[in-house]
Each structure stands twice: as C-alpha cells, then as structure tokens.
Image 1 (cartoon, rainbow, N blue to C red):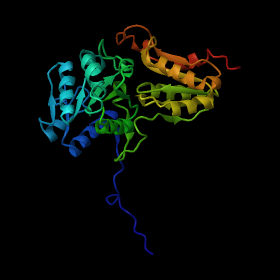
Image 2: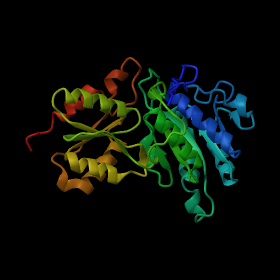
Image 3: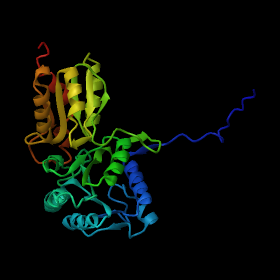
Length: 339
C-alpha cells in the first residue's frame, strides 16, 4: 500500500485562537443567519460595531433592519425589546456598560422578569440582554460595576456569565434560543482572552457549573472574571502543597447546587470569589446555599474574597480593590487547617 504524504497545501489549516469578543461576535452572526426573527441593537452596536467591537461587521452583513444603533435611552432599548419579544421576535440588546443598565431597571424587573408569570404562561419573552460587566480595564465610575446581585434577586430572570471564549459562544447561542429572558453578563476584562475554537462549539448546558481544575483540599467557587483569578491562585497554592479545586459557576440563576455540593463535599472547604462588594453580594447567597446543603461536610466556614464595600475606585486604585490570587491565598490561611 502506498501512503501519500500530505503537503502543507493539502492540510486543513489549524483553527486560529479567537478572543472572547470574537466568539460573542460569531455567536451573534450565527444566530442572525439562522433565524430571521433575531435582531441586534443598542448604543453604537451598528456602524461602530460596539465599544468593544463585539458586533463588528454585523450591520454590514445583515443590514440596518437587523442590526441598528439605538438612541441613548436604556429604558427605551429594553422597553421596545419587550414589545418585539411579545410579537415573536428574538431581540438581543446591549447595555454597553454594566451601570448603564440601571435606567432600564424598571423595565427589566417589572416587565421582562414578570411577563410569563403575569400572563399565566401565555406570553413568553425570548429576549437576551447583554451586559458587559465588572472591572480591571482602567474604567472610570459607571463603567466597572458588578451588578449580578440585582438581577439574581429578581425571579423570572436567567443570569449567566461566561469566563472563556468557548462558553461565551455557546452560552450566548443558548440564551438567544431560550424562550425566556436571559441576562448575559460578559466580563469586559476577558474580552481579549484567546482560545482555539472549532465550530460548532460544544460545552456544558448554560445552567450547569463546571469543575475546571480538580483538587482535594479546598473548592474555589468563581464566575466570570474571577475564574482566572481562582485558577492563578490554585497554581500558586500548588507550589506550597495546597490542592485547590476550581468551580466555574457559569449560571448564577438558576444555581447548580448539585455540582457545587459535590465539589464541596469532596474538599470540605470552600471560598467564593467575586469583584462586587461583599455586603449583600452574590457570594452571600452562595455561602448560604452551600452551608444549608453541606453543613455536616464542612470543616470550616465558607469564605468570601470580594471587592470592598465602597463604590468602585478610580483606575489608579482598582488593583487594590479587586480580588487577587494573593488575597485568595491570604484568606485561605485564616482557616485552622488542623480541624
């Protein structure tokens, strides 16, 4: 048998690494191409392609009737999306920056979250609200908030947050296909994170948490921008003989109690990491749920490593505000490891 060697010209080119921003762009592109009911709009998402270029090129390909620039009125953006979704369309709207979503708080909480319940299931709202979130980009006030606790405290909303390009693609596609409203919180500091993807991307369902690093001594529970922080802390801890398991929560509401509890019961210790302030933050809900379900398995109280209980600081100070691997490891040292 003669074996013919493939030349470089015959070989399929290896997939190139793509950023999270590009993965989101591809997800929007594919959703627009597959379903004519999908529309994308928001401030500067059309001609400019979005502040972070997540929508770059979509208007040129799909036209101004499918991808367009809205007025600077977040309540109007979400309000019109409610009407479109009630009429059978699948709008995908961008809030541009996390704190910019606050003017639309009334629409999201009173209309988006409650429509299915208010109509006894007769009316669904298949709409997606994209919120670039969190800090570590040198942003000023109103550009670096972590608002997940507000949305998670609102029944009727699904809240998810990807930490990598693969999840960004798959979770956005699932969100757009969902017949109920989904808030996708996109960590701005990870928009330029690169990963090699091969389409179609297959990941865990968007309502499931995922163990991204196995460990035996402690479970670090993180989401969005802090997953990388947890992984870096795990690497540093391993140098000192600490075996750290890292769980990417991915879905904040609904919450994957089963995966988290399985991890915590294995390690008997857990810490939650997020950028938002600690008081009333999402980490408090995680700590409560983990304790309620796994109390007899815990060797120590659940820790929270978070931002401070202050407004987000100026860019010169954000490195002191954000959770870091060193802060994570310092917090773990406060436990009595002899217990």
